[in-house]
Image (cartoon, rainbow, N blue to C red):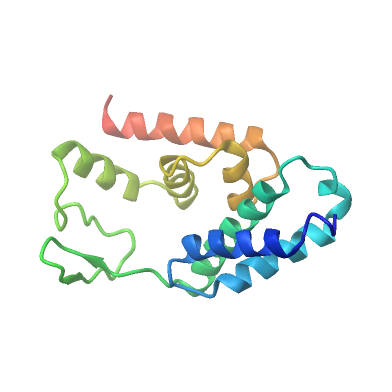
Length: 162
């Protein structure tokens, strides 16, 4: 595995980490965390055909964990660039930003749902694979992710009256 974790591999991870953090935190923390993870799980990933994908998934997970831990969110802005003050994260902000009526209805409905549903729907909307969602949420199996996503979609559909 050490031959896979050469200088070029680390440099490529740094470039990816820079894209993940976008100036919001230290990209080297993500790279170090991913490399430590790969080394500590070398038996599991030693012969993996795409070890970089594993490292990237781990970096994304670490970044999301760091945001959750520190609650460092970028301020939301309106059309004129003024910061929107949102005190309660469950507040209905759909009236403060320019969205279609259908989007406003969906956003308002999602904010009324539980944290687990909000998280899994957000991850799905970002185009994450089931395995990526499993890694980020920390659930034990992809089946649990599929089940949770299906249940949350049914709940959303029911709340939307569709």
